Length: 344
Image (cartoon, rainbow, N blue to C red; front, side):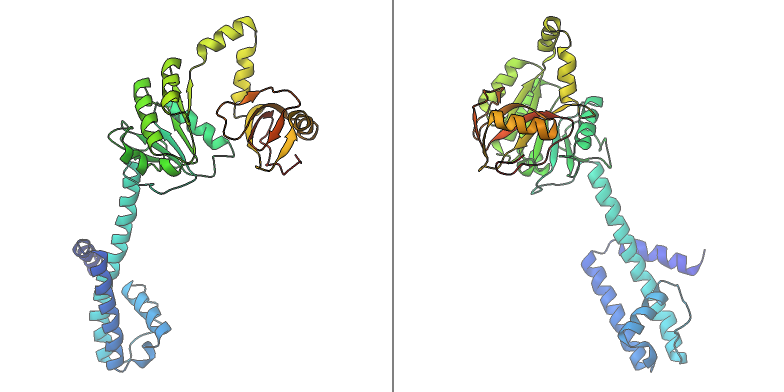
């Protein structure tokens, strides 16, 4: 093993215990004394700022191109002892500490110890149910409205990020903890999805989320419709849904093919899909006129309208219904762009 390698290993272990401030100060002192030493020993051809920087880095990193060398015996001894040995120790420590910091940050993220407090415009998935939750994230990534922002998984049972590279991870003691939800960035998230293994936990989480007054849309899934209704009563601004398996079973028995239609409308893949569009506040038209324009220009079918401030959408309103701002629900093969006042 070469002396340089031994020096690197010793310096890395020695300066690893130093803080960044101490390391920067030591590097600054060494850099300054190296320049002053060269000036004092008459190595003027090495002291110009650009030349000294190039010579210092190539020497301390042991590259040694040989195009710049000290001319005096004293200068050679000074470079070989103080500049080279001291620089190797300090730069190795700096590189090692930087690498260690990057690895620590990566491990911190994998173990769910990150912090997205203050983050805005992202998606938070609260709760993890294995393959079901993986499918949720895959669907989010497929849709153009959510694949350009950060997705944060928030859970209390996982030990590390289940989908690195596709989502970030926050681990906490309880999903109903305000501190954990804050770390996941729930208050500033554009959308929050709550789906946990039990309705009781989902209800507690929904109430905790509601207390944070999130600016984005929050939707929570319940297995029991009664608990979903209870959650809606306490958190009316949040969208609380329940499993529609029974309703779909009955509807499909009465109207064959109904379940296939519903699945197709909710599918993110190819085919007709149900979307939402937010209208400008100044937009004015009738439902019938807008229905005709959407169908003729985009082959899109308008199915409902929700006025500003309303919780429930109005499905299939009369054609004379006045539309003034609000939101549209429509079916199309692709998501439509925003529309301007009076034009689709």
